Length: 273
Image 1 (tube, one colour):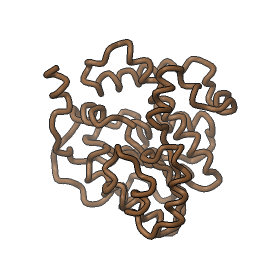
Image 2: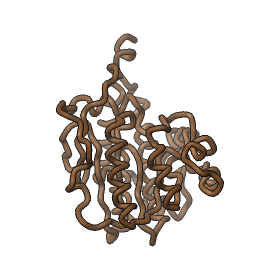
Image 3: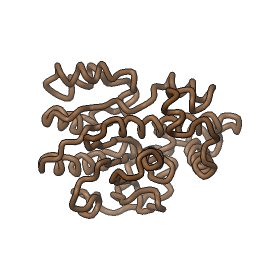
Image 4: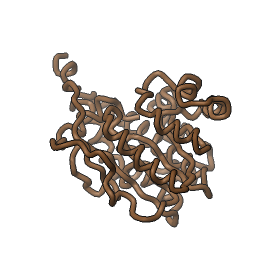
């Protein structure tokens, strides 16, 4: 998960004003449904959550039946997610049974309810914090089985372009005050999350699948989209960034611009220190 500080700092610089959109842009997906749809978010931007839900609702009500992989559920909690889907009548019950403590779950209520209503599988898509800590200490490959290590070439150095871009994102996302000795481990943790999401997405095949995750994770140049393409280049895939601003920069196939969420300066406390 990209931290709230990271999301806010990275996106604040490109935020633009204007009236909030009330419906998703018509050109985000095109006519057909891809086999893999990556839908991003600024974690605390309520408008983005509403527009993303509306985009997904329209497709599902028209007959699409994808599995929904969610960053918000840690992978070791899949049994709880399955139990909740079988036994819960509404999304609030799913959140109570399987939700963790680090998310504003009411923002995800509509997507979870949509999954319950249309019997769409909910799939846990994230590394836990303990898993990520192990990756920081022991490297990306430490969180994967031997087959995945071979498939994603994790016994080799990570691609230099991905490492460089992830370093920039992590440093700026921590107010340019992160100790240098911590950067490499945090890059590894972010990459491990991206690869895990890619693996879980591909595990849903041949069923179509939607990934609900932060904008950093759904990027096609360095995020889960990159790793999905490396492992399954023939799948049809679409990456959509829901961003505060209008700068795509080749990160996504399309973007939904958002009005900036009102928030305090996330670096204020860091600057005081």
